[in-house]
Figure 1 (cartoon, rainbow over the protein chains, first blue to last red):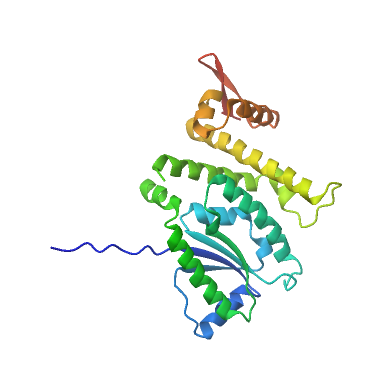
Figure 2 (figure 1 turned 180 degrees about the horizontal axis):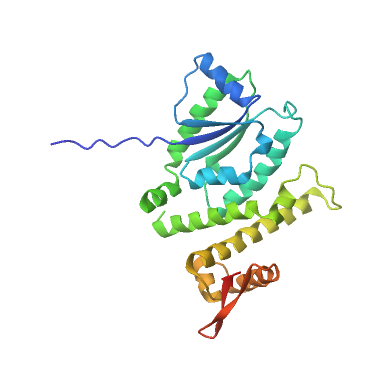
Length: 147
Length: 114
């Protein structure tokens, strides 16, 4: 008799990485052959300052288990103050996330520079682990049911 | 989390997305520098209350979009908001030309989207 094997939950993380720092950091992680889980899907944006809160909420609504926003360290923004704009906007977004009832741990803002490939890989590993602990996104079941 | 809670989560998220698209919230959150005569703490309070109001208003709009004309009581059941709060939002939404009356049901006004 075939024994049912329970599949381990593999989270899906959407990462918005800025072109100048975090995307280059992710690239460096690859070229340096740092291993990190394949649960992440990277979306390159020119600056974190152009990430609208609706993009993050939309990603969550469409079934992402976690969303990572990664940008340049404060003071290093290619466009001077894009990351400061995002930092401020992020605090508003987190307030909304909290009031909706989504676990705040599903959304993260991190600073990763172009030389921090190791940090990026460690961050993805840590976030994947965190998402596994949180479990599947509550939106997933609604999406699969409505399909 | 049961299915009804999940569905309410989806409704709230839809409302939050619409709220962040709204002009009113974009005015206060989209700026990098704010030149106003109030301190940062007070400004945060204002933004937070605007955000909460916008999310609630878009929950009302979303419910009417989904089900057609509704009364305050029905809206209260669907959105889990207090009827008094709904009335306040309806007054604002009517003033902004978003909602209008669409007849009566059980001696209560029905509201529809314009």
